[in-house]
Length: 57
Image 1: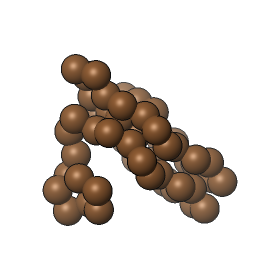
Image 2: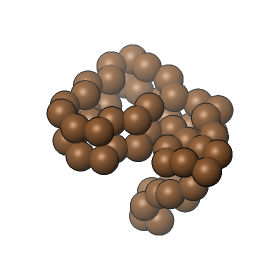
Image 3: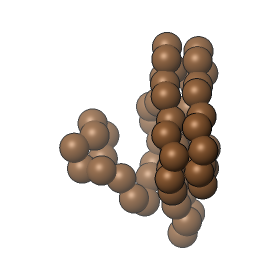
Image 4: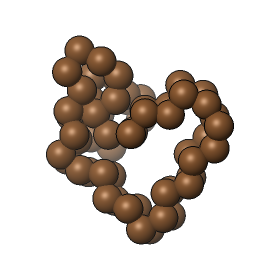
């Protein structure tokens, strides 16, 4: 999922098996705004940019 701005809320969703090929993302990428996850699974993605403090990066 790519978010440029605004507010996104994901509830009961699954984000898995995504890959960023020369771009941004590979799961969830935000370029501004906020994303709220509730009962949402994010796993098994292959990002090319991520925050090292997050598990799996």
